[in-house]
Length: 634
Image (cartoon, rainbow, N blue to C red; front, side):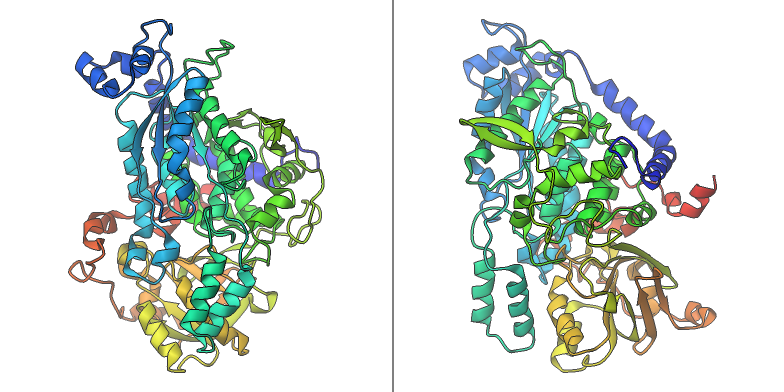
């Protein structure tokens, strides 16, 4: 299949998304196009408003923003929005980016102002802690903070600086509210490889069994997470970075260059120059108008491309929430059924931990995004005819950046994978499908990632053991109460219950049980990290227990089946009997859900939507889109 022939399933899903989204997408585009202006909006501000906006600028920048003085016509003004903090290894490199970007934008004929910062919390630090219950909500807080930064009507474009988990999706959602602005996302790159992820996981599991000391565990973790840059496993942070490139919001090949490499600095400079050239003011040197607002980049085809890349690389299940929320912010209704249908035709082309021993640096060395995009285009699995920050067409992302005598240039990426144990072509995949399953049954709907799960564990039927919190599970494991076939049901972990925390701390203990020969699975309305691993886990269950979902009625000893082969999630109880059961357990009350700042998020907890609609507090699409059967029948 040549690159110009789109796979029929990809085409059909895209067409259905576009048809389903037509009214909302049209309204969104009408709104952002009305906000666009050939003339910078800031020049239409009242004089006092405008003066406030440039009061702290130097004399030359003041004249440039006003459009007076020897600089000539008014110059583009670029907002810099950053998630910098120096606690997060992935964000520490962003410290010096604002000044570097100001210089790059100035060299390209514009002005840049640091418009605002957004919060950036680390899920790796908050795992199993109360702070994790704020993590998913932080995505929407980031979006709102980005909107505050851009709300001054001073800007012609934006540079978004962020890397990890909820931060990048939040920045995208915030930027899409200002969809008339050209926006380039600026990554920082991955940490150098440390202790192999497989060895780190082995020590974690030994610690769960009481066979390793805390000091041994801490030593292993410190060798794995040892310097600046993004954690090297293929979790949510690196999935974000790859998808930003496939969406066309990074410059080609920018995602996985190490923070300390000269190439990284050159790519950061190029991001500043590129956004200045794509504002409505055009390129001041060539007089070529290349206006490229983010609203025109993130369209239905781009969203499908992102889903395909997620599936092809076995990426983080968190993106089944984030991509739905991002799409909604652009007036596009994406459903879990779209993921499921695409997963049937998108092959698994990458093996990175937890789906294999390699890390993101190995992926990059094997050919990285340039090879991945190229082979997916050749297989007809990506739409080539999209807009990107680098210009029209996804073919540009077949290229990789390099330094030619110190100057940034791009060349064709490798035509063949340089390591087929890590990265493969579309016609020789690791697996024929994308490894993501959508489960349905009398326990609701859920997501299951099978790319890291042995086929021997794709179907698990076992008695349920029900828990209303992680501490209860841990106590039962340590007491030896789970040393048998078991489906651990962890409920009241959904967005309305307690913010939908990740439950990654459960995985070592479940891995111990699986290694002892037991049939083991997890069913939860909570989340798992992108490093969820080898346990079959039906996550994001919806409706969640806190709103009367079926998990609230499960009892110890009920036989539950988690079946990735048939796509079912069922409890072996007569339907009438199950319906008549009273709910047990409960989510924390408002009076209980306090401490570590949680009480400040009560309004978000009370208004958040369900998991299959992105678990969003902003831009939630209409509930009726869940009924895909009705949609297909139209």
